[in-house]
Length: 126
Image (cartoon, rainbow, N blue to C red; front, side, top):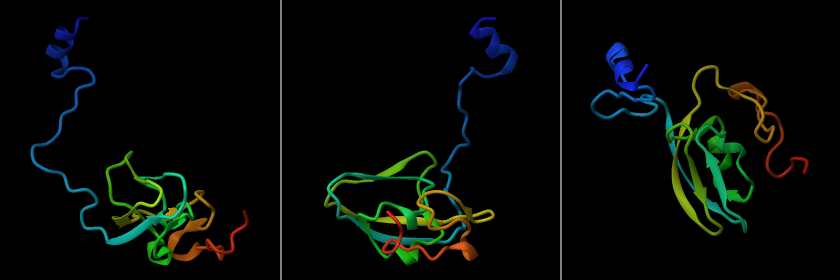
C-alpha cells in the first residue's frame, strides 16, 4: 500500500505527530524548587530529566538535602549539562506517583518519603 493510500485510509502519515494547539505545561500543579548548583569537578556532568537530583555526581555542589525527592523540571528524555567550573540555577519538580526510587547511587532505595537510607555523600562507600 502506498503512503498516499495509507493516509487516505487511516487519516495520517505513519510517524506523523499531532499535537493540540497551544502550549502544554509540564508537571502542572506539582511542587517545584529552584536550586543553584556548581560543577566543582574537572569533567562535564550531565543530569537526565528523571534522575533523582539528590543522587547526582558529588562534584556537583548544592543544598543536597533540599533536593530529596526531586528531579529536573525539563521535558522527558532531555538533560542539563554542567561544564567544569560552571554554575547555574535549575528548577526541580517533585517525583509523583508512588514516589519510589531505586538505583542511581543507592542513597534512596524505596519510597522517597520513608526509605532514604543513612548514606550521605560524605559517608558512602567508594
